[in-house]
Length: 256
Image 1: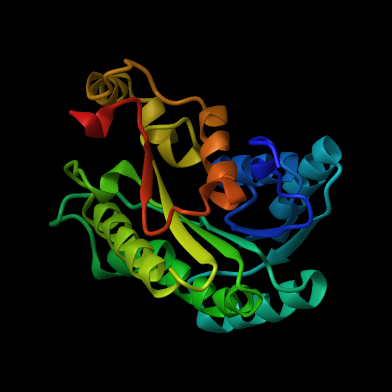
Image 2: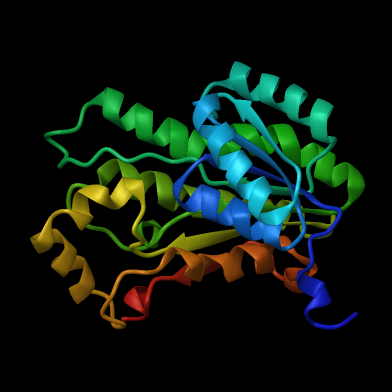
């Protein structure tokens, strides 16, 4: 096996939550380009189907869609039945679905907190609890949690987001230890600022944009394609001796 062979995902099935747009769609595309078949989940079936058609057309891989909310246990149970019924046990799980509500402590409500933490932290817990047993049964699997630089650094008005993403790193380390001798790995990707829909508010605010750039030694935001290599690496045999770890793709922000 050559080094490039280690990155091939032919014969693997990957489940990507929040896979219809942004980083989820990008990572799903990268996995398909490496040979994986896909199951995409999200709240809107119409949006998922548009993404699936585009990815399948570009890569020639099978891409199936399943609508549901990762923060609702009954939805996750149904998604598990539907995905495994159509695709079998998945090999790769990308916990990508996420949201953010900005505001200082006096501005955010309990409902705001619940909305963000339920999607960003409870969602990965529920989805992984449902799908990891299939990986453990096969003694091979990859769980990749999409965390953030905000898992380890903070900004004002990010109470909900920073808390949820810090918790996600805790899940990553814990699951990495629990499965270390079982053939299943769990790692996290921690992006810095990328031009996604979630960051559109900052992109359209020149002052806020410059504040972010000032914290990035490379002096720019990340290009979406710059995440592809990391997700394929963590999903493949190339990362077989890596678990409970986090990869920061942030232009040097957290190196300061």
